[in-house]
Structure formats: structure tokens, C-alpha cells
Length: 119
Image 1 (cartoon, one colour):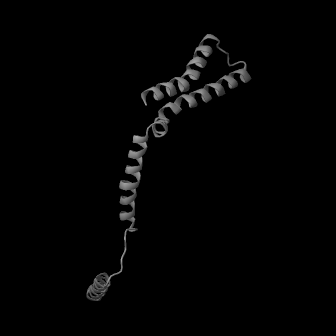
Image 2: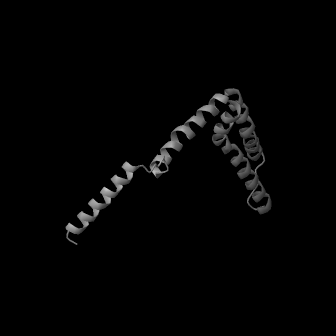
Image 3: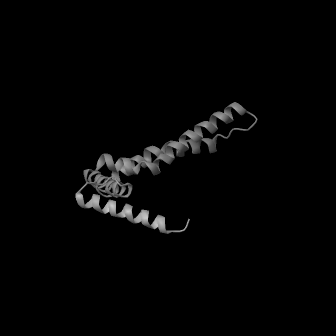
């Protein structure tokens, strides 16, 4: 995985480094707006490609490592999905006689407290 990371770093950082060396050695004046704008565009494109270096690690590890894929699946499906379903109330909802009786009792208690509380 480290070898793949090094290759990705070289491929993503090399174009920007090469362009910067070219731009330093061959400066362009602002009196030539078209040439200046083209160089600015090229610099922004290469800088964007170089910034992918920080975002691509996750995807490289997913592609190259089955153990990493297994761990990501475990965390997302087993931990996060269960936590989300429990917090949103999508868990196993079963209507049993005990649940219905408890719900009816809770509703009656709420009605009593609403009637006795001053409004």
C-alpha cells in the first residue's frame, strides 16, 4: 500500500512541480493578458491535480487492500448503519400484546396528566 501511495504521489505532484520550474525560469509579464491567463489556468489545473493527492488515499487503499475493504465494510455496515437505524427508529418494531398494553397505558396517563394540568 505504501508503494502505491508513493507512485500516486509522484504522478499527482510531478506535473505541478514541473510547471512551477518552467514558470520560474520563463516568467510572463502582465502586459500580455492572454499568455498570463493561459498560464494561470494551467497552474490552477495542475494545482488541482496535486491536491488530489490528499483525497485519493482512501480510494487507493480500497482498491489495493482486501483487508481494508473488509474493515470499511464492517465499520459502515455493522456499526454506523445499526446506530443510524436505531436512532431513527427503524429497528425491529414488533407489535405484541405487551407493547400494545404499554402504549395504551402511556396514552391514558398522558390524557390524565393533560386533564389535571392547568392550561
